[in-house]
Amino acid sequence: MQKFFVVFLCGVVVLTAAPAVYAQEPPEVVNDALKALSEKLGVTITISDVSQWYWEQKNFPDASLDCPLPDQTYAQVQTNGYIVQLVYNGVLYDYRITGNRQTIFLCKPDGGAPGGTETPATATPTFTPTAIQVQPAAPTITPVPALPSGTVACPGGMPARLAVGMAATSITNGSVNIRSTPGLGDPNTVIGLLLPGGEFDVVDGPQCASGQTWWRISYDTEVGNTTGWVMEGDAEANEYWLGPLGGAPVAPEPATTLIPITSANAGQVRQNMQLPMIDGIRRVAFMPPPSSDALIVTQAGELAYYSGTTAARLATLGHRGASIQAVAVGPREGGSATMATAEEDAASSEVAIWVWEVRAGNPPAAAELYGVSVPDVNALMFSPDGRWLAASSGMIHNEGRPTDPNGVWVWDVQSGTQIATLPHDSPAVDLVFSADGARLAVTLFPGRIDQASVMVWDLTTQMTLFEVSCQAGWRGTPTLAFSPDGSLLAAGTEDGKLLIWEAATGVLRHEIIVSADMPVLYVTFSPDGSLVAAADAVPADGMRTSGIGLWDAATGAQVAALADHAEQVTGLVFRDGGGQLVAPGTLTWFAWGVF
Image 1 (cartoon, one colour):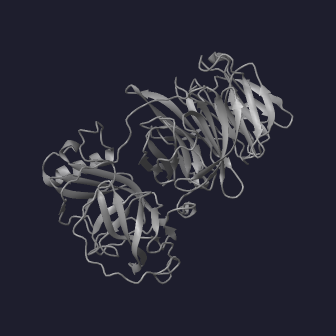
Image 2 (cartoon, one colour):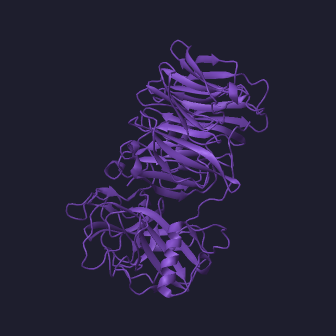
Image 3 (cartoon, rainbow, N blue to C red):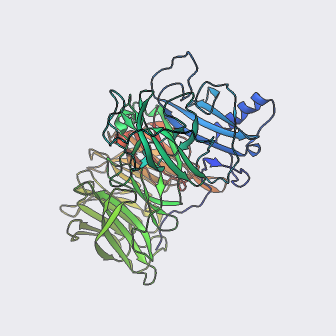
């Protein structure tokens, strides 16, 4: 039985070679670059006039946006902005745009001073969404003796984590320039881009140039091979951009660059990540902190793994021939995680919950622990400490079997023993544990929206603490959330409201209108408990998009309205210690941070 709010729509493509093939409007920053190029050349240029275009939003190490003017000084602070590259009449035009879109200038392909002579593009290959490459003949490189991982190539720099012969990957959110020779600026021409999550072989290095550690890599993409030099990271920021492939992924250290989102700075939240995914997304389960990884149930019903910077298709983690109804992830001792999948066998229509141990990697390793037969599943949820697993059941809107029992079951994850049964007259849908695992909140949907409610159980006594009537969500998404200190309970409703109660008594603190007539699909608290984030679904041009807002948990006042998604939200969570609000769409990975 499928109980997901599924919508199919066109996704965001960040690179295209033939705009007529991808019937979409370019992002506004691309239109900014088209306008600037039209003014420069004295003719009107539209997206249909360029043969290739690429754009990227990233955090630059300083205010020059990686394109410093000669004899100029720049604020040495992380600066948000855009790279937009257009190929028009065989010439590559590389524009840099500030995050507020108030300043735009032309930069040479090598990242030098703007206004230089443009470089004719090479023969155009058949492009798929990967990287734009302008690649002259490879220079002759004199190899240096191979040095082991851990070598400090630059005085006072970071120890190298790569070595010649190693397979490695990009672990940063932005693209990394591949240069003809080590070093920044002329004559170290940019010959390609290493995309986030791109995998490559280390063939030479390390070398010290421009105060940074450089490696020569061989990088294969769908448009060919690029062999050149890349920086291992930013020594001044103590941030690695590259890491070895295999085993536990080496993630960047967000604490040095990400500011926790709170009610005090919510007005400064801006989108800082937008990456296309390899497959349509139906549901996302986030790996336990500090990991930035996630498991994705695709529109095709498969499980995919997201490493924090790129998506990769996996061999099926569940059982072949089974349809995945729900997935949940919880912490597990020893640095791994516990995954639960609710699967319906296509042949027999029997439903089972399977519990797995998952170890991070690309792809991760998954070992089946045990299975539990259940009548059916609407939602799955682990307790925050990973000890308990809860599942809800019951027929919703004539979906499912009339014999599906209404109620909630709770298991001890370690032993697989059922420890609680919480029956009810109404189908149970969304679930959430309190931070201490002592309470469980559940949305109940009897079939009529005006009879829905939220109930809170004490799991020790298995007694009802309170039940409040509201038009509770029934779509199987996380529309319930306890505050980190357990004092508040928030819920999104089918009639577009965000409700916040005192978690101990059920007394209503705030009733917030999020949307006039569309459901609130996801609700979550910031790690410090000062904010509640909520995502609703609204109609737009015959498709569904999602709006995301931030509210002060204490006052109920809205403190930020984030730009509407072009796609429906499929997950909502604060990550990296609250430094990012992640809200994947159906085809794109979106995230926001403070700037």
